[in-house]
Length: 62
Image (cartoon, rainbow, N blue to C red; front, top):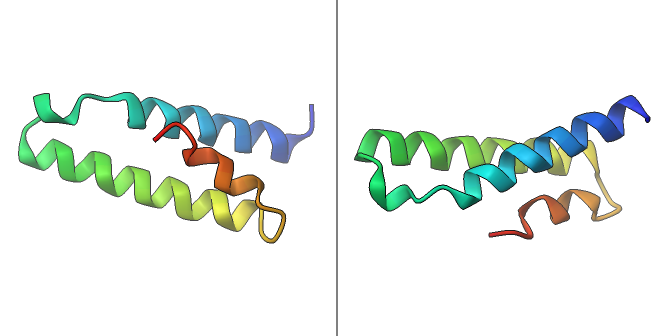
């Protein structure tokens, strides 16, 4: 498996797991951390897959 594909797959999995968290059960500080992590992962995903739209699939579970 291609290294870039592996990294993209891992980021997609992490982002999917973050999107599945029930943030209503977390305190405010943890909710902010989850939101920050989501934002950063989405930005990195878009940087890894510029132009072809593959990075956009990373947040399809949201």
